[in-house]
Length: 290
Image (cartoon, rainbow, N blue to C red; front, side):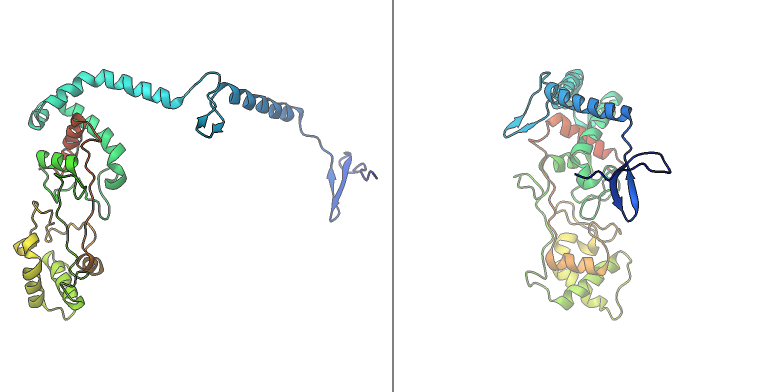
């Protein structure tokens, strides 16, 4: 094999014999410290594979000589934490909601515990600050579909809404268009009437009298006279300018046409009674509780 390497006149370094478009590659070795570090990293990696859990298997992983598990460490820490606050949580569970709010120590415990549990379980829907999102209620305001008292909040947390639990909230918005109750033009008319209830502008040529009649014939049964809502049915107040899905005409038309039936999961059985009580106190303390 012919050796095409040569001594580069500029750098004084031998070339490798490779050349691209007149550019010759210098045969410059890597620094010894870099090579040493590289091989040490390989040795470290092999040692890590042996000492710690590393390789995935069909039904688990290699345990390693130390049998270390970060998951097990977390489980131990959580168990220790539960032992520390165990007696306090028992006291919290035995106290009524009213008593908790009157006792500064229990109230502080409930809020701290509730905030942690809310972040783990409720924040994905309601947001970390409980400000909600489209289709998920803002828990900071004073607008409650099912009531904002301590007892009502705990009832909702325990059993949910349309969750399948026998004690859940079952009210839902009917699909007036999908079920053929109202025609398209009637839906547009009543949608504009609903917008007018909270002072929003309506489209030009809108028939207010026809909208009022359609609303009276189809919506008053749930939303009440004047659209003030009904918490027993989960029917929202249509006059307060707080909208769960949006207040633009297109969104309201979609709501009337296809209905709404959002689901709030039931937390009874998933969380212990003391934790549910703590979460109810925390949600109530956010500023919108009654």
